[in-house]
Amino acid sequence: MTAAPAAVSVAELEEIARTLRCHVLRMIAAANSGHPGGSLSATEIVCALYFGGVLRHDPAQPLWPDRDRFILSKGHGVPVLYAALAERGYFDVEELWTLRQIDSRMQGHPVQGVTPGIEASTGSLGQGLSIGIGHALAARLDGRDYHTFVLMGDGECQEGQVWEAAMTAGNYRLGSLTAIVDANKFQLDGPVDAINSLAPLDAKFAAFGWRVIEVDGHDIAAVVDALQQARAGTDAPTCIIAHTVKGKGVSFMEHNNEFHGKAPTAEQLAAALESLS
Amino acid sequence: MAQTLALPLGRATREAYGDALLVLGTVNPDVVVIDADLAKSTFSWTFGKQFPDRFFNIGIQEANMVGVASGLASSGKIPFISSFAAFVLCKGFDQLRMGAAYPRLNVKVAGSHGGISIGEDGVSQQSVEDVALACALPGFVVCVPADEHAMRAAVHAAAAHDGPVYLRLGRPKAPIVHEPAVPFAFGKAIQLRDGDALTIVANGLLVSEALLAAEELSAHGIEARVLDMHTVKPLDREAIARAARETEALVVAEEHLHHGGLGSAVAQAASLAAPVPIEYVDLGDQYAESGKPGDLMKKYGMTAAAIVAAAQRVIARR
Ligand SMILES: Cc1ncc(C[n+]2csc(CCOP(=O)(O)OP(=O)(O)O)c2C)c(N)n1
Image 1 (spheres, protein in one colour):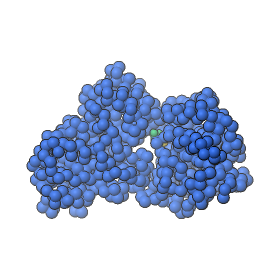
Image 2 (tube, each protein chain N blue to C red):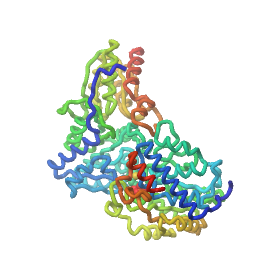
Image 3 (tube, rainbow over the protein chains, first blue to last red):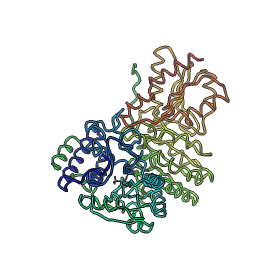
Image 4 (tube, chains in turn yellow, brown):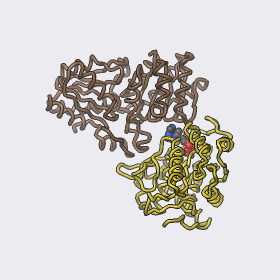
């Protein structure tokens, strides 16, 4: 495959998103550790990238030089990325159930060079956007037309490095770079606004020279549309602020930050899978 | 391995950190606590709930946190700052260098989730270089307490000490190796067992493994001295000199990279006092991975069994 996979219908995308959510919950329950909340909030974003005809990639050649790059800067959300990579054929779905176990490629946070399809080692928040700049600069130097997407958490945007990168990407006019913020309004210890508010996030990115697009991060058609606009590029980097709900799709996890970093019990898993079906 | 020695599991040293902060907050109004969005994991939240005016959860910005602590200390406060060790030391290193070590300020750094025994989160959250980094900061006291009793004592010692301190906190419940009223002072090793065949020098979670190893060695007629070397800097050079002279062989055990931790410090001290064979039990020169804590400690060779094997090697070299 040398082009973006053909786009599928909204209904099909919604079905795939449901499958990804079920994988996420099963993986984290099997590991009895992990971060459900931030995987579930990012599900439509990851689904749109990998199944919505956005990313140009080839699972058979994870290091194809012309592939689009996707860097999961909020590394703790990796279960949803593993789920998408498995469903796309980077590795077997069965491997998902080894999440966080010894000798597994399904490491607790993304590890470059270990898991096919993982572009950067993350898990220490705040670093992915800088790495994305490097890929975008390399594309410019090599005359390649790939696009680089970086997914960050809103809490993650408290890191100073994010703003060093924002300044740099804006000044370098990196139109082939897109930052996506999974704005689920929570971080580890509580609501982002209560801990150290980022508002107004749109104006901050705009002030650094970015084109800003705000979108409902669970409206998959809208997310695909925003990503495609971003991929089409301008002479400025694009920031997509995706307004999301932490724990989305599982009633007792939605807006409940207890599930930031806690696995569901067997009963909770059964209830969650039931509510998703 | 014969498990004759029963070491009851106590609280995690990070929980004991929270306990001690709460007491400190009551007795010392100058104590201020900062965390970087890990307050529930480091247990600094224990203080935060009780003293909201003197608690700042600054968000996910470890370098900024260190700088803020530098300013607070310069204005007479005693800041205790916490995050995962991997983040506060790696992201805050220059700020620690310029804002705490160089001006010798009263900044107390608590790095939680030290070592690989944090388990499933994997390498990004496993701090395996924090002791080396902290030791590279002139004037810093660097301390890795083994259990809840030592940790509480260390927090109080840190508050009483005039200058920068690094405390490593652990995630899992830690076996109790000390009495509640442990005689604790920075830079003074605690001897937990005596022997003449070798000395096992350990800190953190490896102290309990050292005691189990000593028990096993004793069953084979080998009597080991065991030192809890909680303070890596300033090192108790006298205890090392005595151990080297009296037992003529050392094993150093720590949950850390090979380079720059307790092993390096002990080797330097021994080389000056009385060069003797030394063997090392540590992570080596590599990162670990995700997995259950016990499985990881086994796979990466930081167990009582690994200490026993190192003891046999060092005795053969004597
Ligand atoms: C540098 C760094 N500091 C702290 C952490 C611990 N941590 C893991 S997730 C998290 C909260 C992240 O919040 P956000 O970016 O909003 O992610 P989400 O809510 O989508 O899970 C924190 C503080 C970390 N992984 N890296």
